[in-house]
Amino acid sequence: MHNVHNLLFRETYLFIFIIFFYCIQSASNLSTRASKRPRKRRANFPMEKLMEQFLEQSAQAEDNFYRMEEQRLQAEEHRREAEHARELHMLQMLAQMFAGISSARPGSAAAPSKTANPARTPVISSASPSHTRGHSSHLKRPSTQADLFERFCGLGSTSHKGMDDDILSLVKTIIPPLTSKKHKGQDGRIGIVGGCQEYVQKKKDSSTIKKAKLAHVVEYVSVDSPNAVEEIEKWLPRLHGLVVGPGLGREDLLLKTAKEVIEKSKARDIPIVIDADGLWLVTQQPSVIQGYQKGILTPNFMEFTRLYEALHHEPMDSSDYQRSVMQLSVAMGNLTLVLKGEQDLITDGSKVYSCSVEGSGRRCGGQGDLLSGSMGVLAHWAHAASTAGMIRSVNPSVVAAFGACSLTRQCNSQAFQRHGRSTTTSDMIQEIGSAFKKLFES
Image (cartoon, rainbow, N blue to C red; front, side):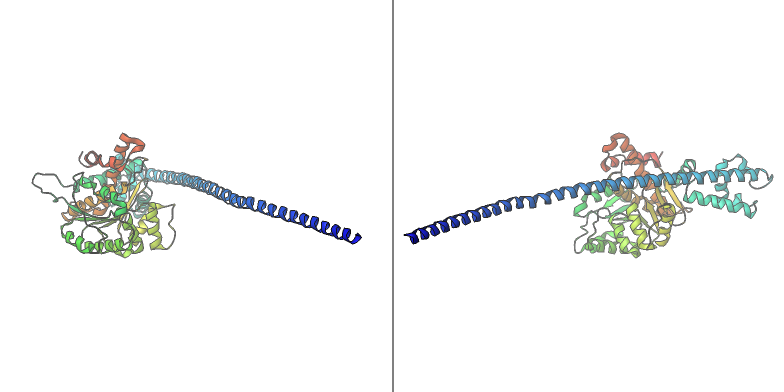
């Protein structure tokens, strides 16, 4: 009996122990499951939080970058203005000094300059040899320095205005008269290589010179077709000028076609204006247009920087754009270059002209295409006038570039007066006729 009680006691104790162990095991399993669920939630939560923080930091970094860049540009602008003011002051002092020397020498060849504007005296004596015959050599040298200051830095608004008027008068001489005896295309047939599927509007903007009745535009051949070069080559004998690049695209096939068309156009000795994606081709292969005197490049700041570094293998000197644009023109074989900006800088490597016709603060997409299209027309007119002996003192391509820059700026100014911030290139197109008349036919 005693043994039976002991056996029952042991079995009861064992049964209680088993139940206790099972409860502990169940509790641990439940806690494990419960702990796993929030882990999944907590694993996702930090990733989303990190992504939000990353995006916020990226936005802040971008804002800081643009703010610092704006401050840098403002500082650069203040520095350039101060430098310009110092140079202008120096030139004024030189002008007064030489005016005093000239007036102190009666009977010298400079005597007629007494009635002239003293601020222009050094420039006049430098530009015209007949004014310097009576001077000794030490009087010629400072005037040359003054001429260099005018060439690279400008002499202030009066001098720029005079230079603008001189070039604009040349532009007026190249414009062919409208007569009833002419037929369509007689004043120029211009081809445009551009406007791929991504940028159809670019070719239309460049082609709007047709709307202004400036010239006849030859279009359309698909540039990305396998036989594009053969198709375009059929048109080349009829063309008087070519514009390459507006909305062209950068695919290898398109650039290869553009290169071949440029080569064949050079063989026909017609003016070629290269802009936008055409400049990307020139950056990769400068020899495609290098040294061709009827070629004109129209880069913006970024395109100019890429092209400069590709030829010089060093960063551009951003403190002296005039010198940089001359250096690049010389490196390209004295090719005519137009650096678009606040004032368009135009050079063929011998002298820099600054087009300061007033535009506006509104820079429209497609405005550069309007510039290249009108430049194609004016380039044909300028070289035709040069062949006829109508302009000899200035490179015809420079005259054409100045005229096109002036026209585009005037269109922008007139459109902005009407539409303000909402101005588009289409609004500028509507102003071509009146702007052209105001600049060149008044």
